[in-house]
Amino acid sequence: MIRTSLAVLVIDENRIRASIIEAGLRDAGHERVTVIHDVSGIARRIAEIEPDVIVIDLENPNRDMLENMFQLSRAVKRPIAMFVDRSDQASIEAAVDAGVSAYVVDGLRQERVKPILDMAVSRFNAFSRMARELEEARSELESRKVIDRAKGILMKSRGLTEEAAYTLLRKTAMNQNRKISDIAQSLVTAAGLLGPAEDE
Image (cartoon, rainbow, N blue to C red):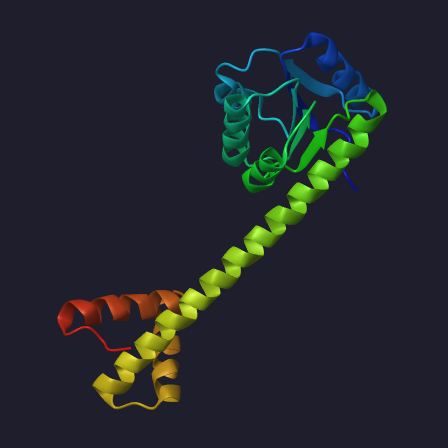
């Protein structure tokens, strides 16, 4: 369930269009709405306001303005719904690459604001979850590689079996209250400093 008490920042240089978005948000129960008409110094303003969601409305965006907004969306790590009057395939692809959660072409109507905002939040959360899971999987894979290298070093230097090498790593990690991957990394680093590089 999406919370209705989201802090929403609306960025729109056109005051009439901004009022349409603001009305749609307030009708949907969003009381904490901030509207900014001047995009200069926008990153600092976002840091001050700390919105949960950002709605950007660009009447006739040129390439530079779009690129600035895409850079902003990469930096702020928040759901962003972007309304534009017209677009092309390159701009749509750039919006997706930048992580814009909802990119709406020629669709600014008051009654559409809430469902589009809800979708932007849902898509952002789903994307964030996938990115987090991917990072965890990468980290796990990297840890396994380091542990395998450390086991190889122990097997070679102490004549241990693979199982005995892993047991020694695990026991050392438990005794030092550290992760096995941290112990393995320390061993790999030390081995690199003390002798010839390990052949993989």
